[in-house]
Length: 254
Image (tube, rainbow, N blue to C red):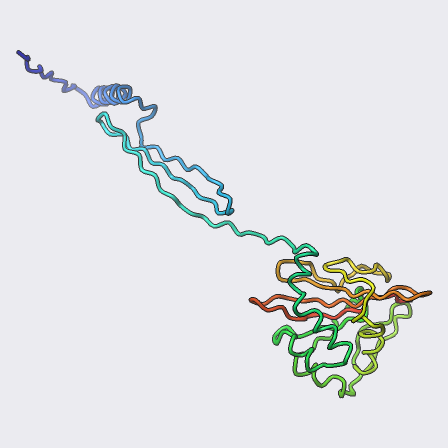
């Protein structure tokens, strides 16, 4: 026969005594449950999956005054901004293969109507006589590009390297000297995302930083008894379309 539990009268005489008895009772229960701490514990553990998205697993342990421990786990996805690596020369070549030959052929034929179709409408296209040219290179919209050979305006393209004199030329005068002064459509070498030929007295300030949306191709033509020269065509990707944003002449400047 089971004997009934004898209820003890644990009513303390003071509030301080009541507090101590409560604390002792709580620690006793926590010891039975195997708990190491009384308050609910929240642990936030980061996970690093292969897709570079950081997931935080929040585990909340609720300890109750019974023999069960309730564990609640939630996933908190936190997106980490990823930085796209610059395209390798092979990737840049593959990306520009469908359009770069069309652009260089249009330059060979002075077909500015075709060239204008590849110019980004908002950014426009910039022409630089040297990779190292400072200042503010001239930029034209697609509509302006189509009319440049008929435009008799003498533009300031920069300053001649060496003399420092202003380079004031019409586009028709500029073209055979700083765009198509050699047969770049039949190059000795084609370089993607290269560093240029290394001529000039200054760093290559006109070349942008390569990225997932910026790449360029340089057509290099060698000439016996003379320095090699190159034409750099810079492309920028908008959505799924690559546009021409810069045409830079690369050659000996003095």
